[in-house]
Length: 550
Image (tube, rainbow, N blue to C red):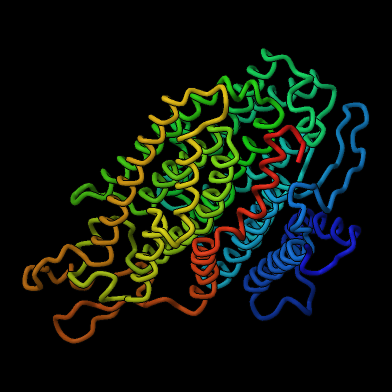
């Protein structure tokens, strides 16, 4: 069933446009604006250009989704297959199925919302031209990662996002931004070098880099030893990007130092590139190698779940001087642990749960980083002790809509039933209860129990954050110092009200509501109607795990 019948050639064009348009837009952003489009403020003109390009890509992605044949989500659609480097057998092979389409839409949506937010709230830094160009290059590389079906093209797209994210952190970030940017680039580049060796090994041993042909072959053309080496090499590169414990240490620094938009894109779409690689490449192409490493992957995943939650609890406690952005970054380590656990089960239930958790994490954590960025702009800090001790009323009393939305995002992140975060975690744990044939049931049921314990820890730290940031420390009013009652925000939106009463903060602005409402609405929609996602992913996952047979 297609909502609107669109011809295959138009679908091909739409997918190619989605991948290439941001790249062309990035080049155009660096060129002088035509006289008629320059306006009174050249900076605003280039920011408007960013909104226009990302908006056009989002519209094209929505039209592509509308024309997608939902009756056959396991079939590659909108495919383009052109020979590019005949000597190496590399082809420009593009296509989407039920696994990649939701990630394509998520990337297009989040990048557009980031461009819209930046139009009104550009982070402090060098030229807006360079900022918009980097965001567009980042979008192109991410979209290409989810659309290409050739191993070497996948690697090129995978690497394409590193440089723009490095500069976004290093030039538009906050304190310690250069150290965080270097840590990010060194970790990810070293992981990528190892990954390239694994991809080349598969291509040379099988005689093709075509991901569809390799998935259909289902590892039959590769010996078990080759698969084991390939999974180890490729898995390390993907695990760094995911990030999997203990290869995660670049992430909290990158999030803490990065600008709001950089954090949203890093958490919302870049982390998904690693988990997507596990599902698209390793599960179907090297199943024997994955079966060998699945218990270890699951073990690292559940350690990451518990470690991330304990780190968040340590940051959230009173007197720890914890940074709220850093706390949300550590929560990502835990959430992505659930995704890796689902993949490690090698079952349709677990992999569907992993893909659902991927999308849910992109929506919820993207919203959380938007909100934390807005709070930091208002208070001038993201220090939890400062936010909690600023006034007895805290956010609920000073910016009630902002406080309510933060509480909503927090309970969505802890997996409240009825919101998007619930289904991915639940399906992942179900998958761990009954893993694929050949995997140890007692081991995976132990991992399931540890993962379930991790959900309790997640609820604990998220509720502590809501209590402290939204409600404050509940100090008696007479005990609050004058400084506590009226903190001075970075850009001055706070203003004292009646004498002795807590100062007010600017509540959610119109542009903020426009950027955040789609994420909140989709979090509710995916939570109440999970079939909208699972209906796309399940047939594609079934085919992938069955070796290309529907």
